[in-house]
Length: 112
Length: 113
Image 1 (cartoon, one colour):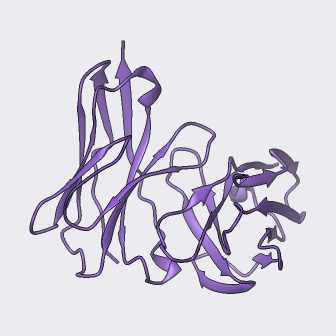
Image 2 (spheres, one colour; image 1 turned 90 degrees about the vertical axis):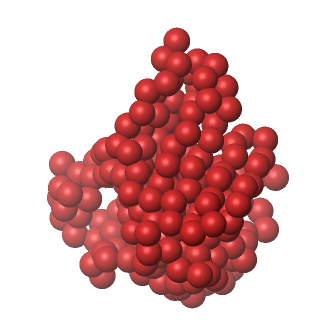
Image 3 (cartoon, one colour; image 1 turned 60 degrees about the horizontal axis):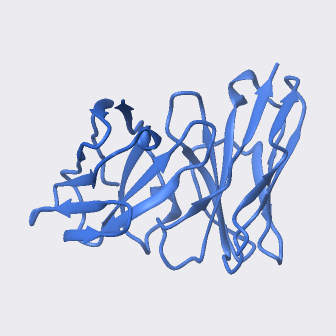
């Protein structure tokens, strides 16, 4: 199983772009990178998933370098409502369900 | 399209008792996973059900058991409750094609006293 490392916490101000990096040095060839967002007392919400280069949706962008040993979740122009815990997961989409492991995540706090 | 729902929202039980938590999966989803989330921690995978069969289990003792029904709804049963079982229990459903693209319910907050 690919182990992931994320910063424990980050602070940002409203309107800024936020980049959260996840390290996954032992990522396997078939592994994808997935990010979730979780607000207090709610279940995590799927944000974005990618395999290589760049993926963008209406919420975020995911940048993955050629060696795939890290990835960066980019949130454009954050607002107070983006304050949440962000989790990075790495694993094969067709792999065992035992891979479904969340780390401690990154607590993002957006300040006014 | 109905999202994932869980019941009850909150529950208080005494050590040694048994509890059943329920989950209705999102329409069209045949896979359900259960997670335990302690305060300040990420969700920990308990087990997953795919078309009524257990399809993977995390490091939880046998007193954590589950069921998935023909309509793909699911139950999590915990016997002989311990104080450390106090947590938010999350259910997530998916269509079984992409392991990580799951849709979570709001959770059940279990307190064991």
